[in-house]
Length: 466
Image (cartoon, rainbow, N blue to C red; front, side):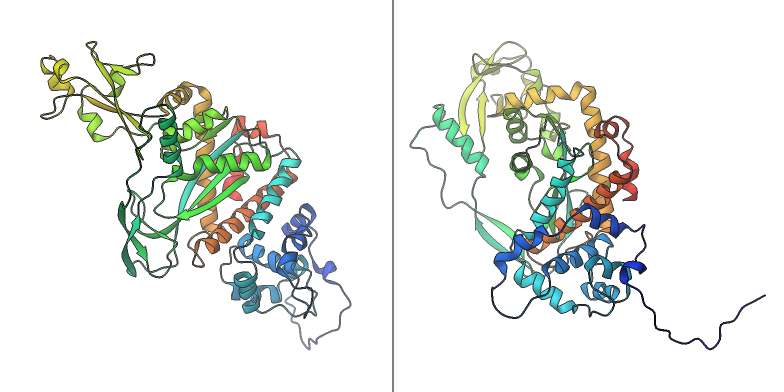
């Protein structure tokens, strides 16, 4: 028989928000796993000792975190949801009869008080340290990749500017080493006044114009993330402009997080974008093996019948030996490029029967450029022949690519909410915190040793569902 409710009246109930909050709720798990009291110490220097009481900074941080946990990019909509959501009120400690802060208050505090502070990085680090302390993040294998984030800037609002061209810190370091080894004269100085043209957004000067094959063209940021291969926990987040190459900051970021967290890292994995001598050499110096695919050979190398691999390098002579036994001796070091140039003698190549296949066009000599750290590069690539290489590459695809896809689908990483590299870094850090919290709760409820994840690769399911 159908029932019909009539004469319903508003009743007075005696209950607490604790009674209304479901016992089996994700936010209860987070509250039990993370004590957010450490935030008071991190932000105490941002507040005055006198004046009107502020909104609790823990409430502000938790509110921002809620938006990333549940994929709500609009702060206005988020505050409206908190108004009626009991679970959200319970997590924030806002009782049923308390007003919810206005969305503009949240925005202004984030922009004016917490902007350019280390608060969000400190929150991220605290979550990572929790997992390290219980042994679920070892950092034995670190996997790195980057993803583009569309900037909050119109592509047609641009200008061309001229900037000073400066070699990277790594190239400057190589120049110093070459000077110490006597490869260049002490009087040699880098060229001054070198400039280059770049396209810059007039809306957001911090973003960069991305123009890569297979990537969308326009103004973007790059979010570089490192993930622990055993647990899937993100251990480092670093944001750059969209016209930055993947490998430029990789070695520094690996060293930074290994030293900061005291990780016992023995291997790193990445895609071919990180296959540069700088990365291999820096990791080799730390005793870390690299599992990175070789870059595809250039069209110029493919056209030659005798590429570099056909020439044997002699460490004693510091020279290459061609297939018929002639030497390509060291001729010069290119400042700002970090490469040593080797070339043959014209008399050796003049009557060589292999000249047509070896030297393109009307060239008279064979030339090679060898990176200063090419020896370490070749030693690291000996790892390509091992089973461990295939294992690390599988982990990289599972964790790095799936994590980025998940963040863009569910955790506010589709586009940049704000402008400026500091604000986009905040967005990427909070998105990473949301992923780390979900994976942390998943492993707490179904604890498994890290070795199980590495050997069986079953965390693909967690990466997909969380």
